[in-house]
Image (cartoon, rainbow, N blue to C red; front, side, top):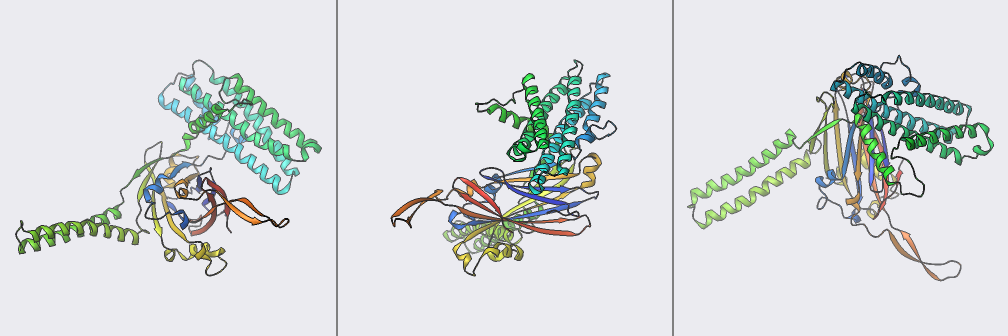
Length: 508
């Protein structure tokens, strides 16, 4: 969704063999309260035997990973080097380090410096990722234009200047009076930044190497060599520092990948927002209480009626008591199920408090709910989008499906967030859903097929791929910068087999 007025942008991708990722970028404007909601509809082939009888909300939530974090602040490398830029992590680190050198070793100061160091690592990685992605997209769209050449040269110059400045800070951090925690945090960030440089620049150099321009365009060749030089210097630097993240040829490099994950979690922790889960939902508890009351009333009426008619030790009274007890539980469950099903739009399964990691105050609340739906209960827009590729009126009979819906609604307090975090301009809301339980009863991924060879007329045997289509439709609702409620849809088709996700296709 690309719109200047939009506050919500989405991206759906395959994260790995078994997980689908839905990432939302939500911009924070200077308002007291704001909200957005996401409804995700999964259309599961009946042949996978997934339904209300064997797939419950607890299993769905167990298959989900959720992350809510602040968006990485956008500060270019050249701007970060500006000593007059107060909100640059480099500026703040140097200013606070002067206080530490002057003898201030307070816990508050040390934590503040470590915070800025981690934020610096996040910003640098974000700038590398975004710029490399932009260059590659521009090259694929327009080729190696003069504009792209100049942009790449400017970026590499900014990067080399940043590396030079960062090297100076590495020297400053080696002084003996620097607190140990600051030294250790900077060493982790130092290794992380160096690895990020190598990782993203290698992607850029790899794409350039595949280009035919590399061999017949001196400018492209020169830029490629310049990038390779930066990568080699960073690899050599990590080797000199005895950092574990050095690639070794003809090795499994297990430690490198493991260490990279540890560094990423350590540095990016500065962006994550605390969440506290709660099963309590007021309307849900009222419904459950009402169900228990009605069931108890039924049992009490039966008990009083038969107690007045028979003695408490008689067979009829005991029989009536047992029957009322049996029906009491069934009535309670039936009322709970009926109301929950009819009020699924208003009630949620769980409430998650969104907590500011610095002030420990609530900055929002997230509610989520899961339920199975019948085709006739689908919203018209969702039903129309799902049926768009049915060629005939009976086409759906050949592809019977079960449908479940996951709804998430989040309310935020942007003004409260921005009051304590001036550089926080957005929220990343990430959900990863594991499909492993959905494909447990899938058939083998390969099926044999016999056919007659057209050339020799002999019956041959071939191995064919057996796949299933899981359709996913997502409805997003949010308030734009003009204060108007907006809604848009996305549809994707997950092609899966018994081993996991084969591919994902966007359905327009």
